[in-house]
Length: 380
Image (spheres, rainbow, N blue to C red):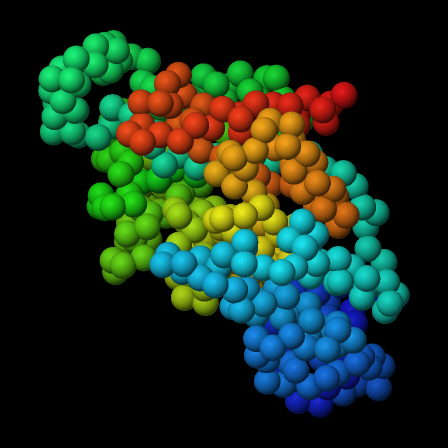
């Protein structure tokens, strides 16, 4: 079967959107029209005027679009424009929209590929490439003077001789050798301007360029668009161009720092205008789970793919290592239920030689131990 047509005499934008989602999920062309061979479905009329009110469950086409794009609007949002997963009453561990799409394919005789159990992807946000280097001479000297006055001789020694407390390149090289089944995807913060939430390295630093070039030779590297770039005209473009020039190739993947306004129509349009192909920001900031009801990448529009990330380190640091591992197993079972990889996020600096060098640092020990335990259990 190469195409499926659903019966509707005057399809609107919502019909076209759900057709786009199903075309990607099914691998066949899905459309709406009045052709004689067009299929009927339990059309509740919701797609004619979509809203946040949940459509009847029998209207599978409307329900899939509602769960993908409209449901999260019913949640509480924080000051950063992020939906709060902890306020949800649904089972977030299941990719509900994608499961419904697969069930619908069966109902209409669309053959889907056999479901597999693909390996996971660890997403690494490089909010702070270095603790001391790459921040400009004023920051380096000012910080060094502060360490001297405090008598923090370890920090003084690290500034002068290394190793940098946050730089975890050696860790990830060792990790990839120990866990070759686990893919790695890095996102580097290159904030055009420093701000309250953007306190990383300077994008014009030679040390930063050298480190990212070396990292990019071995691993996939995208841009971690800064918090402040949402508020500056041309801010996104400037940061994408920084990474383009460092790596010498066009940047195709991005992930929003702080997940600010992730998934909004404005952010999707801005990324499309930049020529980006993938947005890895489809995630809850405060809870594990499949935010849009998909574990597999799904189209945001004709050009941009939304790539779900199901959990971030800070979601689970209150748990014991065994509970962290159990949560990751449960999320992976959810991803495998639709034949997708589990993508989970963490932060670069917490795998460096001394992450406690960060002011007011959180303790990620149980997360690191739980992550290792989960991976070792997967291989057992």
